[in-house]
Structures are given as structure tokens and as C-alpha cells.
Length: 181
Length: 105
Image 1 (tube, rainbow over the protein chains, first blue to last red):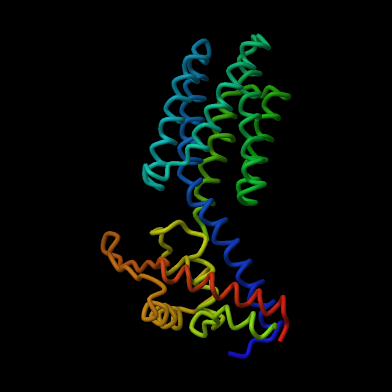
Image 2: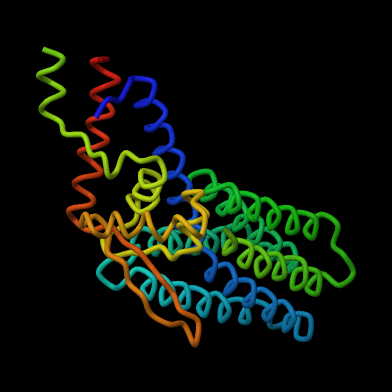
């Protein structure tokens, strides 16, 4: 087979592009149900916090546990238990533990500020994830961080409804966007 | 010496065809047993509906991909994955291409 160096270079460039895109789409397929799950958690918990603001701490603890457990179940269904992404699980556990430590250390009393801070950190984590695994995840993280920062700085009159709609909604719509080819 | 080096690495005319090369490249990053469906393969390879099936059949006949057909509800679904032979053959072909770049012709 007669292949010139130019043909070889073109073919290898093609391979890199297609393989890279395949890897990115695979990351999106894995992330999509997790984003949708967390969007539902954000929406439900924030709606409940709007009704019972004094229970925000307990509501978020319960919501985080549901989200975390659900993410592990989704991950193991997609990959199979022998290929469970233990690094992903540990990363999520570390982020949640660090967030809990920040809550304790800073002794922030204003629950809304605390909520916005933790959601801002989550958005930043998604942005870092997106740097390595795809632009769409980065963009979603940027939107979540922006929504949370705006909520924390501007304290809109219906803070929890804002977080449920804008934050939870962005995660759900974003998760569906990740499924598109 | 360049010719001798090239002879150590085999070329693969089945894989080298541009659409089949892109199909193999799309499947290569996936872990063993993971599959892509027709729609995903079409989007990644740029193949048309008409020729995607033909190229996949060629790769299947060579033993490089495994084609699985089932139904999701009432909709038929076709999915493909790389076989072990396919993965090895693709890697050998990449080595062949890199050797050409390194040693010229």
C-alpha cells in the first residue's frame, strides 16, 4: 500500500480528531444523567427551603445524600461495578467534605449566603471537570457559578425560587444538552 | 534501513480507507465491550446512512468490529464495538502511519 508522509499525517490528524471527539461525547453521556439528577435535587431542595427556610440545613443534607447516592448508582450502572469510577466517587466525597469544613470554619449564619457559596464551589468544580472532559461541561459549570454568584451578591427577593429555577433548571437543561450529538 | 523498519510494521488497507479509519478511531477510545450506535457512529465518522452499513459490514467481515442488533421498545438499534483483533489491527496501523512520518518514503 503506497502511503505518502502527507497521507499519513492527514490520516493521523483525522484519527486524533475523531478519537478526541468520541472521548468527549462519552464523557458527556456519562455526565448527562448525573447533571439531571442534581438539577432535580437542587430544584426540590430549594423549593422546600422556600417553604421551610429554617430547615435549610437538614434539607440540603438529605438532598446531598440522595444526589451522592444516586450519582454512584448511575455511575455503576453505566460502567459496571468492576469499572466503577472510584476516583470520581472519592473526588465527590472530598469536595463535599471540604464544603462541610468550610461551613463549619466560616460559621456563616446567613443560610442563603452559605447556599450560594457552596453552589458557586460546585460550579467551579464543574468548570475544572470541563477543562479536562469537554467544553459543554465547562459552560454548564460557568452558568451554575454565575447563577450562584448572582444570587449570593444580589440576594434576590425569592432567593430559593431563583436557585430552584435558574440553578436547578440550568442543570436539568444542561444535562439534556449533553445527550445531543 | 528505513525500508526494513517499515517492513516490521504492517499496513492495513481495510482500516486505511478514510471512513473506516474514522469508524475505528471513534470506537478505539471506548473500554472493551462498550458500544456506539448507528447515529453516534454517523455523527463521528461523517458517513452517510447509505455507506455506513457497508463500511461496518467490511470491518465486521475482517473481524475488527462486532455488530449487535436489538430493539429499544419497537425501534431497531444497531451498535458496534471493537474486537480485540480490531484493537490490535488499528494500533498496528497507527504504528505504520507514524513510521511513515518518522522515516519518510
